[in-house]
Image (cartoon, rainbow, N blue to C red; front, side, top):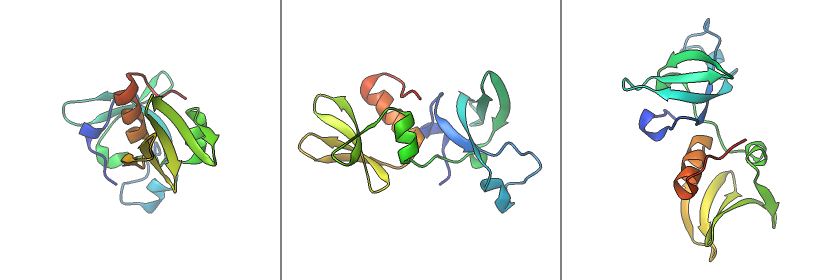
Length: 136
């Protein structure tokens, strides 16, 4: 999946390989990627990534990759396992629920409103619904 700068927000987590000796054409580039938060999204669509308080540079969206939603990530974000599924209540009538490798926004009567597969999408949806950042 190629990311577009328009689907990203400051604070979103993405994967990047900070081994500058590898080219994008080298399959090894994608094997040792690490997670970094986005600090700036520039008008030329480059993305600045941070490692703690230090900028590691600005990169094109072709150099970063989305992070798949996993059980490990859900635990980091504070999701709880209820009735066999990781869930997070969002509002009075809806919740986020992790089923079969993807996150679903569901109403209390089990209608599915949205499917998402990547951490930045989860962060953006949570912010849109609550006005708060989904923190680790």
